[in-house]
Image 1 (cartoon, rainbow, N blue to C red):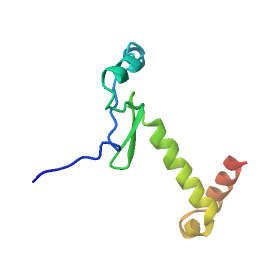
Image 2 (cartoon, rainbow, N blue to C red):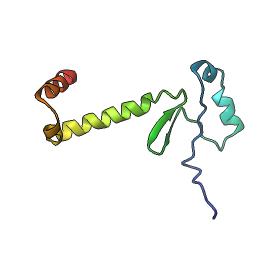
Image 3 (cartoon, rainbow, N blue to C red):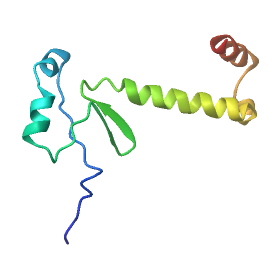
Image 4 (cartoon, helix red, strand yellow):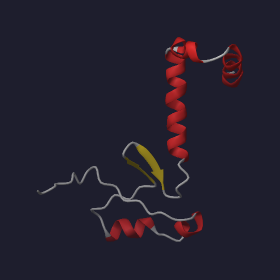
Length: 94
């Protein structure tokens, strides 16, 4: 079985600490390997992975999606939350 990868969708990421990543020269790497697209954040199986493995981009995306769904149809969660939960959510969005 032969697999063909879509070169337009492939992204490369360097993983490391902030200090290690500061030592990298991504411009020089991009010039050396022009066919590779280096990115600070990549998506793998629906999870956003950043170069420091903090998952902050993924958490932000999940929170944005949840808030959107709550604003779109708040009655969807009505059977499973208490009045205190609703008041807490209302205070946090103001």
